[in-house]
Length: 542
Image 1 (tube, rainbow, N blue to C red):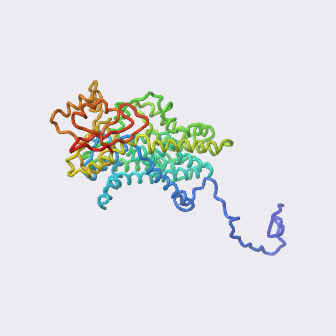
Image 2: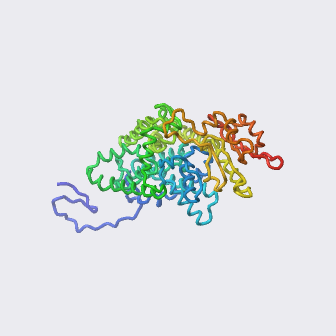
Image 3: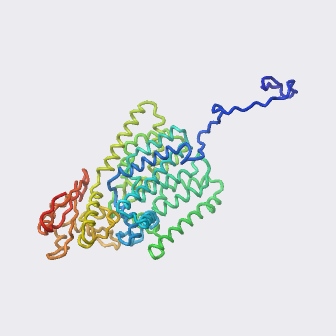
């Protein structure tokens, strides 16, 4: 016989109780008796509810981030997105060789073209809004991705770990530098985080696989190499799935078909013919490896330079976190390593190519910070200050001249009595500056072109290479005596001495100077000079 506690009395199981009928106690409505949510339980509202202040704070930070990044990074953030969108809506702009060869799809530029069209219909298509609204839109998407990363970690681990992962994500200098730019790599990183939130990681709440597969498919349409980090994740999901056939037939194949069909139809509308841009992209960059035309690096570059530079001072915390993190995070570690290995096999390498796996690394960095026993405040101060310095320097100082000079071109356009009275020649490495998307004026402009050789010619030189071999010779050939000259020349300071004879002979004078960088490379310089042909009397330098 067992003793059993009753309502103030004692009874024996199996024997009738001598006490009267039990009195039902009133339940107290007190927070003391409120149920505590289990660790890993996902709150009912991730964007609202208790997280509304966090979400608004992240949005405010990313908007501030947007306005504190006033430098250029790579040409693709303008030429493969905003410039194409400007051409789609306003019927003027420049489409690079990738679009004539159909290596790029219109899905990503269509996002910005929609924004441009709305602004145009509202009569608000000023050049400043055309520049900043797309970037603000990208900033909001990045803020959503930040919150989803935090929500995912709160589901998988403790609140403390989730907070430190979010801290690492928000103070990463490279994330700050890239997350508001109109790059396909930025959208790829955003979609990767959103998809990871719905991915069935060990310990996460089961969700409909179609959600994460749809986001992965969308990322693939925007940038085909976005599938690289997802290969180990997709294979793991398929291997661990109990019902592999339904997963394939009900999720993978239908989502893939809808996404692929949508992409093909969009490109059919704007190219005017059926084309598979994803195949063309992979063929050019992976199978033929023709991207090396724009530079190549040794196989170990990502491990010896690229990855350490992108992580920055997060690197020791990432390594520490890899040793501490539980087994369920190993798939993320494998994904990072796999991505680095695959990109290492390609000759052309850039920092931005591995941006999509940077949030994966922040998981391990946050886990490291959460488990530091000593020197925690010193580590946090070091991490925050070092990344803040890098973020502000790269966002406000390094390579800002190519954007500042576009403001000058805007003034040239608006001050000209008619649009054809002024013309611009940009004598810089090709695509150094944005183009019509940052001028929004049909001003005659020209730049040095640099399409790769697709015909297999030996010793091929593009226009920019020919110019820099002998700048003075090129100028005299292009503009012989009595030829019509551009009213404005834009050059890097490193070129001024070489073409000074031409500038003096053709009555050009320097009218504006813009600081560009403390770290000039190759054909660039510390400053950008604007030269203008003399009209009536001397012009004062601004």
